[in-house]
Image 1: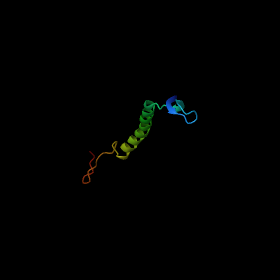
Image 2: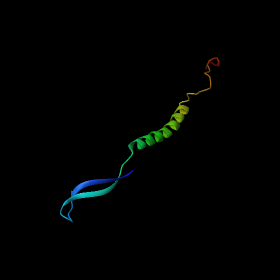
Image 3: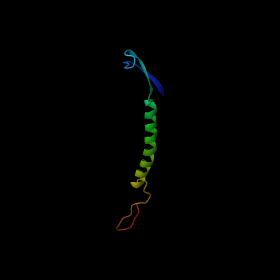
Image 4: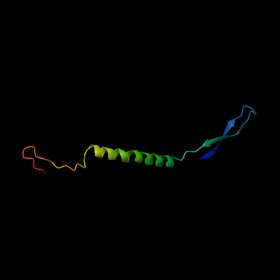
Length: 72
């Protein structure tokens, strides 16, 4: 969002304290925080999926006894 900043400063040209103008921008911090959370979420979800698959949590194979070969 664009804003106009105002300040009373001494002017070297006219030798008086006058009102000076300056164009500026105002940052919407809530929008930046929201976008940061959304972007972080987009990176976290695939990371968690890869981490879970890498840890073999969903291991479908059964344990097999090394002596008798029985599955449990």
